[in-house]
Amino acid sequence: MAVVKSVDVLTEQFRAKGLKVTPQRQSIFRALSSSRVHPTAESVYAAVSSEMPTISLRTVYQTLNDLAAMGELSTLDVGTGSTRFDPNLEPHHHLVCDECGSIEDLHADFPGVAVPTGGEAGGFEVTGTEIVFRGCCASCVAGRPSQQHNTGGARAHG
Amino acid sequence: MAVVKSVDVLTEQFRAKGLKVTPQRQSIFRALSSSRVHPTAESVYAAVSSEMPTISLRTVYQTLNDLAAMGELSTLDVGTGSTRFDPNLEPHHHLVCDECGSIEDLHADFPGVAVPTGGEAGGFEVTGTEIVFRGCCASCVAGRPSQQHNTGGARAHG
DNA sequence: AGGTTGATCAACAACGATTGTTGATCAGCA
DNA sequence: TGCTGATCAACAATCGTTGTTGATCAACCT
Image (cartoon, rainbow over all chains, first blue to last red):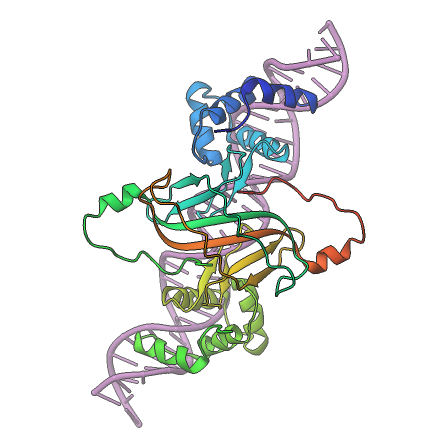
């Protein structure tokens, strides 16, 4: 599966844009390319800090925003408070666990999902479609043997 | 279309829960039942303030959260920074304009949208599905006569 | 009608995520 | 090597939202 581009490719792209390729940025590139999840800026910072303890959170934010502006990252806001950065550039959707907050990718396409022309949404020009399935991930389901309790109901359902 | 329940019904439900029905809360009920959009706490506050200038923002937050906890409102987070409260309890989806930030409802059901059993999402227990179409609303499209520029690309597209 | 109980208010502080600022230092790259 | 931009530290500020406190007021049950 295609995730974020390799460190080398990102290096090239940064140079092409006139941005310098610093060790900090390369370390961030590496952290992203080894990530299969949806890190927050904080978690990228934590990962990079382990091998480069002097890096600042500001630099991480800066670089992540640069990458997002270049289209090499997507940003993802599922209402958990902080922005997630998604290194997966393939079109895909998300499964958000309301219990543990984890976000899983779902690589499926739903051909029927399109805004009906002419209806209440007449004239809306769609540039992107996000489908978020909320619920309970497999490990959280496994964690509660038999009872099925409804967590919440206050979150958006549509 | 079914929006939030009537002021009378909400009054009953508040009483049944042991919550008092104050003029402030009734004013908020009225503001919601006359709303066809997706107000923020601030905009509810603004609406209620016009007829009750002494109400505090805290009270608005409190009451909106009470309503959401009772399931009479949905909360909606589309990454615009603040939480939207959705008085529309029918299952529906949303069209988010990346230019003006407006959110429109889309009452359509997409029967094919379901998490495939067994795949990478095996065991995920879905409790709700949100589809967000991002793009440009009709009025913003009308605002730019002929050029079509791509706004952003940094937002999540999957 | 009265008393209990909770709601409201004001004013302030705090939170967490993120961004701005500043000035000094450092280093990528031509 | 030098220009230029990146980084850093430290701090403050933003925005949306919630907590606190103490006083006042009023809804609602009896």
